[in-house]
Length: 445
Image (cartoon, rainbow, N blue to C red):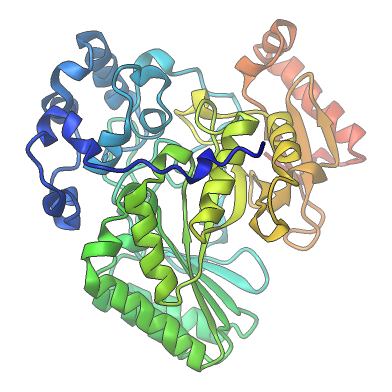
């Protein structure tokens, strides 16, 4: 008998079990402005919100975690209400947004804050031009929530105790430099508008950006990227001006023969409720196509059955699973990373469980700026020492890119080898040799 439970979405006023939300009615909880105003940003606010649902030990652990995290913390009431506070240490929502010191692991010695080297591929502030015909536009540096695993922890959100953030193009005047660059490069047909998060763009700025890019003749495709539907879906229900602005850009693009879509970011099946279903239905009725990009996260979606449930649940809502990324090699979140082999195993299980167009591609965004590589497409994978070697001939020909598995997932002997810098260097060079790479100077890692 086929398991149909992925269609069973959480419903009712589930948020009322959170002490701070016990008297919050549905119209208030669905108000996106109320959600923003009541987001949790400090340990004190977390304690005030959940009160005796969380143990004093957990709150102390979280307090230390807040202090050590590279990302600021901001968690919407919706996300707080989805956490199983009877077991917060194992909860997949908590793991993504609320750090605890006891779970933190030492960083892999090859980790960096800007692991994808986006700043090196940025010709003007706020624009990353890596692929021949595509560019990434970063017009905003804030998000409705801050994900612990953010690949742009070097720039997104306020400064933390551990990281001073790099500036992006955050003003309309700076955006003009981006539009001028895109207009001067006829090869650019595809623009991703991210950040930060497009959810945080006021409607007038969303329209400004969308229409300015549509006015450039050679721009054919545009994607607005947002985590919002996963952690604050009610904005799509109650912020009519924002949805109207997005729909207006989509409709104008369609009249011009240009493709404008929304890209979002669900990671766990628990993030999807009946509120989500209502929000996605509104987008569907407005003709707004939605794709999803997940990150493969330890303890969140790295078990095959959980990823399968997420994929099926997304398809049920007319959200097309597009990518599942290997967790980027950023600092401070080693406890969330998985191995390349895990991605291979999960992908093998998921493929064939639904239609091909609803089956995501599992990719490694190659550290150092190699772009997205199918996880299976490595030149060599040393599973024992956790070293996967990729090439990107159409992105940066002649260069090689290495993804390193988290050390704690390796056998004890391999973990010990990584403690010796000379031995670690020899392991990397041997992996390159087996990949057929003769000149290690070509390596970006």
